[in-house]
Length: 228
Image (cartoon, rainbow, N blue to C red; front, side, top):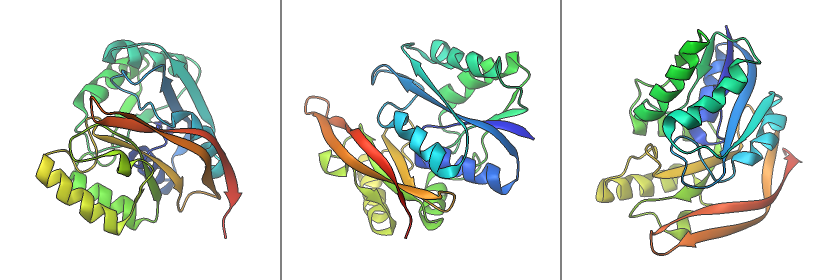
């Protein structure tokens, strides 16, 4: 089956790609959409542009679209540029299916081109998928937070077994989704089983808004390095 993977560079879309590769589906491209600002409904803002390094590290083609659209339907229309260029059977999304707005918006565009929408882990709970991602050996870094309970200290933090337990405690205390669905937090994968090289952040800054208690990691320089 010929597919494209909607790719933010985060843990869930990376795990979706992992699923696709294990299925031996033909990945025509990863599709990353970088919004103009943090107000986008569907797309991650921070570090998306560095998916170019991830694609190179994994040996998979990537299409990077920069978008100034705001609103689910308008943002999803950016995918028309891809479907008009590449003939595929399906578009694959990460997550556990809680992002109904995103899925519906993508489905509406995909149907126009007779393309199916696949969410491989939609029957998982948030905790099940997050544990699977960590156990699989992915090096996940938190790049954006927007919820009570997650402060500036979480920006750039590695999500491993220890921090997963801490995150679970905070999610129960403050009532946010453990996987980060709904824009609670975003992530970026710097290494993992399907990476031939790992990514190293050379220059970054934590951008924080004390009024909204939210912020993101702005990566200004990054590079690929050989794995030991």
